[in-house]
Image 1: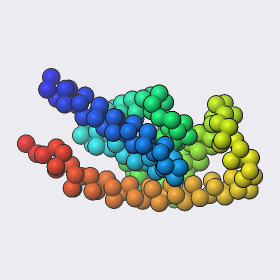
Image 2 (image 1 turned 60 degrees about the vertical axis):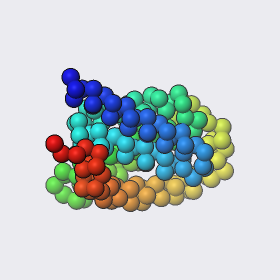
Image 3 (image 1 turned 45 degrees about the horizontal axis):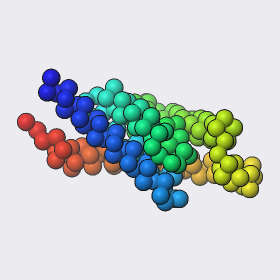
Length: 179
């Protein structure tokens, strides 16, 4: 009973922190991409301590609450389509035997997620400001942005390795002391 209460409380706290990060990201224009990346990290401690299902629960709860409380729909969609679940998926992807397969799988996930996210934001639930911005950029510039998104994603993927280590060896002993 006590462990269920603890798990629920920890999941709730990290989901709330992720929603606050996403909401705060709408204050600064450049945080449209940083806030979802930071919010996605909130599910990692939960997954490490209580399992993948609990981490996925934090991701889902954060996504649902963010849709209601965060004014920046683009940041929320980036969280939902890529940066919210990717830190949970990364350990599984890193088990691929060949590095080339790992990188290609990660880039495929990134590209499919980005295209689905912006397809939804441009054509299904159109955001006028985003449509105007994309219209001004042109197709070549949009392709360039996709290339930059891939490079940034690979940097984020590499940074996650160190962030996982920092959590496991520095933060975890303070949050969840042994014994």
